[in-house]
Image (cartoon, rainbow over all chains, first blue to last red; front, top):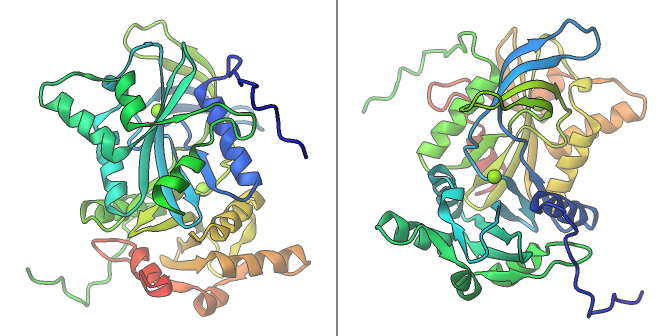
Length: 183
Length: 183
Ligand SMILES: [Mg+2]
Ligand SMILES: [Mg+2]
């Protein structure tokens, strides 16, 4: 099979980061490379209508805050856990997009010898970065110590790993992890 | 600290298997033994009312079928993935409680060197068994080949691992896994 023209620059054509990652994870699953899924949105269900014989209808429910990250799974024996975030800012990623309990969760994962990270997408420029948990914690601590409340794009270029959007898989984060963690 | 009287037989006092497992996982988390969470119930959200300024209210939603298992996470570098099921039957566990795509998911996990299993609770007798994925698949295949559509309790006693209900943790499945998989 011929490889696609290297000069083609893939665009996300209005797909959200979540859609791109779901496609990527589906690709990994089909190819037997990884089993990674997005967790469902946590919802507090208050009232369900069972009147219709066939289908229960949830009539009142509320969004709950997630206690963990969005995605987790396994590849070649390695536990993988990450959060995905988009920002409209063109210059920096605001840390208010991450919750403290998600930081705690990622620390717990790393203590158990898992891989934890965040994938950040700048929607205007379509640039995507993978930032390892250990690096993220440093920027988090800087904020906690009164420093800036965001990670600049330049810092992501230095301390993170740029991911080019491709055709299949669209966001090949596994390639980066395999290099970083040798698996 | 004194250990609790060994003669005490803990009862689940009306707690569901899910509640017992959530308490167990919380115990593991607090003790730094594992990071394992239940995934939220998957819900298809159709209509959300944003009228109230503070809180979005989900006004119409439907339960979706889970594409994976209920619980996953990590302990000491090992990826752990399982489904938990209760049955009111006192003699056997009906395999209709498991979906084919959950079997597929567990097979995929094992191919990636993860640990996949099911925890089965007989609610009448409060007996709990851990059955490894590899064993479950054999009973599944037996059904697919026209054999019985359930796993008898006697088979679970032979091929599974009985778990005594305790105080903390309530359902110590990690102890069994550590023995089975040496971690
Ligand atoms: Mg999220
Ligand atoms: Mg379930």
